[in-house]
Length: 161
Image (cartoon, rainbow, N blue to C red):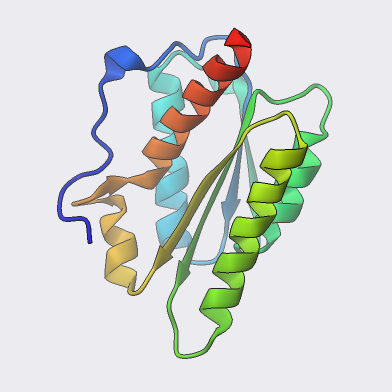
């Protein structure tokens, strides 16, 4: 298990995101966590020169709905350069956790395999609420920040092809 801030990165290794369009889809379930992820992603995109008008935010009820939203946005014209999906599923007392986490992961992976727009996976899958809080701006960083850096790097990757 992580014990240090995993959101640390070398900013000099992150390309500019100037002129790029990003969609951020955030699950409303566990919004005290997911909205902090969203805020971290937005802050990071702005830090790397994304114009505020080029960041589009969308909301869905839960983690599983991230798949549908990402798929729709991957087909949107004009196209986004990258789509970031953010959600949080916390382990409960039933198998629901496994089904939602596995289904969402497979759905996002399938979109990435079939579409040309990178979809960045920002789903927290935590055993406890505290683990999630530690990862949305707490002692382990902000996974929304990490998802935004990944999105920028994937856009740069695609542009180099």
